[in-house]
Amino acid sequence: MENAIYIGLSRQSALRRELSLVANNIANSSTTAFKREIALYSPYQMDTKMEEKLDFVIDHGTIVIHQPGTLQPTRNTFDLAIEGNGFFTVDDGKQQLFTRNGNFKLSPDNELITSDGERVMDVNNNPIFIPQDGRKIEISTDGTISAGPEVLGILKLVEFDDLPRMQKRGGSTFETTERPRPAEDSELLQGHLETSNVSAITELTRLIDIQRSYESVKNMLDQEAERLRTSVRKLGTTTAA
Image (cartoon, rainbow, N blue to C red; front, side):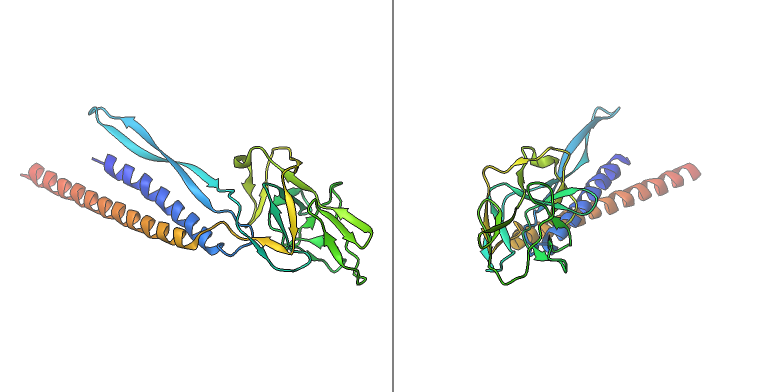
């Protein structure tokens, strides 16, 4: 009799985590280059002694949807967007990470950094310094940073063959065990940023569906619990008689 409760609890647990994912997607719908996440589930069928089959819900984790967002012009010198599947290479002081968020700025030491303070790497895995001497900074489609005729560095753009292996480290930052390769099919656009690929309307609709499903499972569990209590009371009455 408890099988229905166990199945309901497995479904309820999965819905609770999916609700958290959707809420996080909505919260980051305006985060530059944010990639939405979805939950991955599958049924686990188990046979019983009564020759019935029970389908439990197995939670396999999350999947990041790497579909690019749209590119919006900002006209800011250090705003960069990637056309293609490439990633910028950044360093948090412990390891190299990867991001498509090109909302860069200069540190007090004129070092090119991310909005979270991570160093932006060049093709030789060195930080990039931008002198503030009044010269116009231009960044070409291949990542070459120039101040007039002087080349200040070349941004390290990389690509990966196995995107599902990439694990989120922050809103728009990833780590992976896969070895990156130079980006051959990606180009940069200076003065642009990539938007989040989250559709707030789609996620809100999904949020309502999850809440309804969660409430439906809760009602089923309440009914099943009441049925068990009624059965125990009847059994107790019969035994006493």
